[in-house]
Image 1 (cartoon, rainbow, N blue to C red):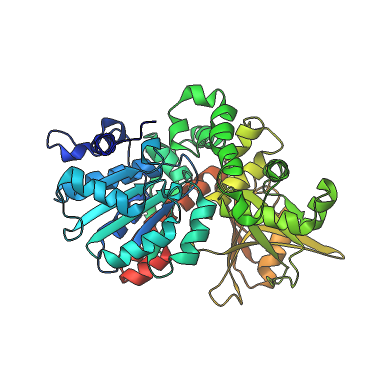
Image 2: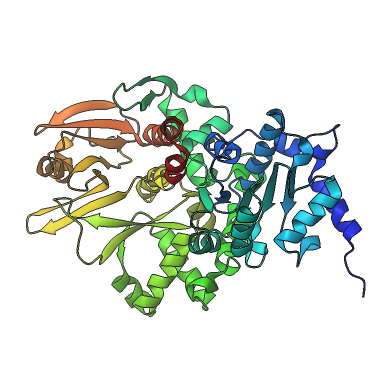
Length: 492
């Protein structure tokens, strides 16, 4: 039986690194794709050599990690880095099966002529989870080769996050690339004419956008809910015609079946799949472990383990509850579950329409999804004590977690600017927590009014979603430029 020869491996390696040939740079398929806004946060981590750390790029499948790596390679070349000092390995290619991290480097040195033990080089391992014990060997390599800047990526987010935290403390910098934000979706489609250049809040640096055509912006918002989470999908009408085939089969199923659920003690994949489908259908609803256990016949501890995995795999996000005084509950009996990407619901069930009953929950899911990759801790408030009951969808507690910094109530309706008294629960929450104003989203209305001493700012959900996505990226970029390296990396 013949074995794969070194010659064949070297040929494959040269084909993956066309920039070694002076006549070519990275492939046109990558150069033709517009950079994601997150590139400007990711690339400085690669260029920074003041701290000896590998960069671990993680995120859900098909959000553009490989494309962003190749954009980074092109940027390094544009910065004057010798092309042969940059090497890319697609670790999941069958020809590399069984190779160790060190063996990859040896093949690189043999193929390029670079002395990787001494020269300053950049090494990219794509889909690193296919290397056995990658985290142990990568940490050793970071210590052994101070001249090498290692960048690794992987789609098995649960496995990467677990192993990175266990073995890479002090040697790895995790960078999470989320699904597309609505801001990025509009930007990639070159439809920024749907929003106007905003005024800047001099106090916070945040920007507040307006739109010349809310109907067109809402149309794109609906498309974003159904197809907008993945860069590949927004440019492919054939995928949009059958999102279940692409998103469910190629993304969701692979996470549930292949991305190492055994790390979390999960052996019954059918149960896991059923739970995820249930949670996806109920995105933005309040649920409890007790309710899930009763309906499924699965023990609460088992369901908790399933939920931990689904959250680590970046499929869902758990948001915990506070009471009317913004106090946390001793026992978290109730919580909300959100899909990290609303597009998954359309793939599992049917695309959403503006008039559908579930539209409000999908709008809420989309707004929450803009925040998932940030360090901002969010809660929701709900209380039911006698005649006093109510709910507020987004609650951000202050740094000391003793006060409410801001709150948002998500609606997909223009009814409430005409009937502000129907927001009595949200207004009461603000008064009880000394909050002078609250944001309430609408379908198309922008207005400001005052009710019982509380200022209510109404803004279309689509516009608010765009604003949040934009401000999170741009303000983080500004903030990180003002911090030292360690602090900047911890922010990411």
